[in-house]
Image (cartoon, rainbow, N blue to C red; front, top):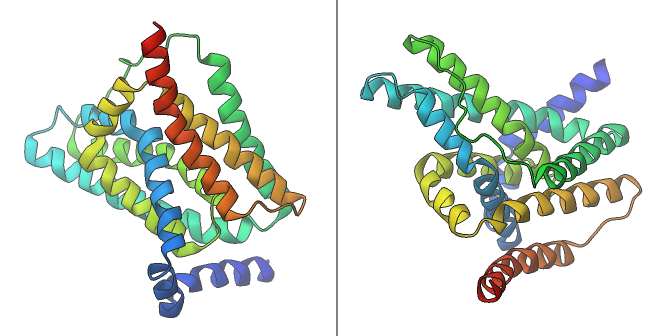
Length: 241
């Protein structure tokens, strides 16, 4: 128990290490990782932002903004807790293996259900009243965050890289959700790309359990190739159809 508490405290100490923070900020490679986390969050959560907007639409306009703002604070707090605890727990091999299996299962489940039509219009009914709506938004925010936070651990183990990717991802989603929705509508293959990337991240995480580490150059070159290939596949299908 003492070892666990010491380990968690050590993880959180990274949040208050200015030298480490500046090292992340001034390293271009870290910004490439942060950027990839933001894009992944956007692809996975574009429709989630729309769901949250629908959940608060019954409130007056001023209260709608407040409810979503409190939801953002809750998402940031959840990421602070999850990343601090997770960077310690993810070092335990069986927890890392379980996380990798979950990511792989997410990808497999998506491809298994790909041909089935999902009911995208079904939105959880928002409770009446401001604070009950805020609570519902908080719970939904946390539920939406779990997958993206776990995927982030497969990309990096640096606390500030993970946290900056998470908070910028949430901030961006609330501001430009419609852009991602339009992009996914125009290029529907991007949804498949997102889950293919999750599968690759899961495989990378599982490989690290067996002490096989993929270099960042190879990893990000693969992600970029897949992402750009999505647009090539889309235009190729469009020409042949």
